[in-house]
Image (cartoon, rainbow, N blue to C red; front, side, top):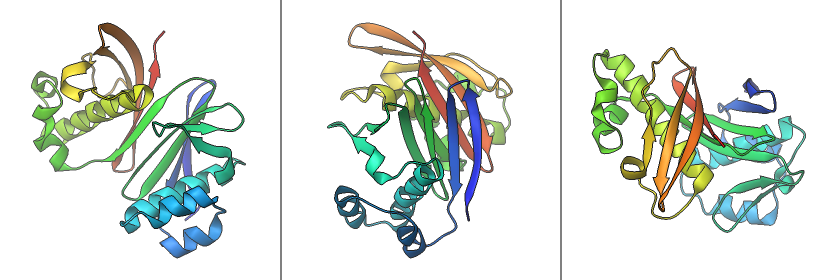
Length: 209
């Protein structure tokens, strides 16, 4: 299946989604990969990870980039050759990238009951009070995405989701919220946007300087 949809998050930042229906061979034949990417692909044991990796390259091509325009620093953070900021995520049958003029971190997660079961490990359960089970799954998944997105921006060893990243209270209808990272004796603030895409939650975080 071709490119699925896009979301314009703000004036200079958009997210792009690929719904993966192809097999690995079809995706591989449709993209051009540099040697380091071929090496990474060959090292992936999971077909799902391979498809997610290749679908990201399909999205790059959709935007006029290619695999040669994408590089990673020593910590694994991606960069584009033209200086635009990029963040990458994939889950099950969706890959997504976010491209823009400011630093961002993204996460996409499929909605599943397991997230609710492990929620007490990464969030304050008060956030889930007085909600239906389906809304609890939604909110727990959003909060996980908030923490994952902020972690992608900072990408520092030692950051703990429950101990260092704190989301402010929000309603599911808000579509946005705020959060803080308390780490290394500093407090950093972030603004968050979240969306439902099919049976997935997409979250994008920006530093709130």
